[in-house]
Image 1 (tube, rainbow, N blue to C red):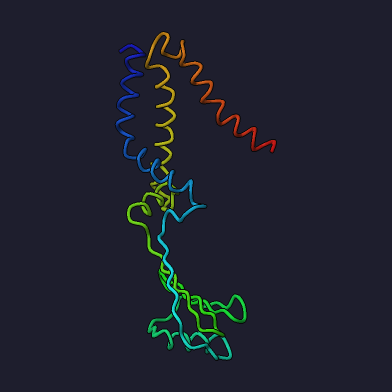
Image 2: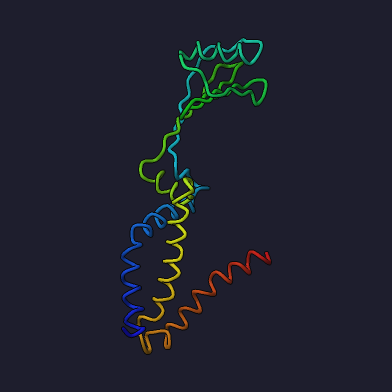
Length: 184
């Protein structure tokens, strides 16, 4: 088999093989790139309720009083007082922020976003282990796709023609950004 035919077959077959991973990394990459604007993995909602002010003298007394006034039967995973007027109660998927002098309570519920949570966990390699190996193989496949893709077309539309200019511009984008971050 000639090298160009082998190149095209590899490009086509590896391309089909990595479609699923490309969609996972593409969709989650878009979501994660905008994490400053929203939480791409979790949906957070806030509710404000009012209870009577808390009068406990120490953290444990305040926690017990808050649980009673909020009608919560479970035990918090943790309780924290970031300042003398605030009590935070942490439960799985829910946080209570209590203003002790006023009794104003902000309840924040946190739930994983369906599908997007799992895609982001894969993208961030949260599970490690075998997924690291698969991600590394995917990275190698992407490198192979880039290299074999340059040699699919011939002549004026291939690497010998306008392709060399497009490859140069494509290479200058990350190099230019790297230089920009280095010297700013």
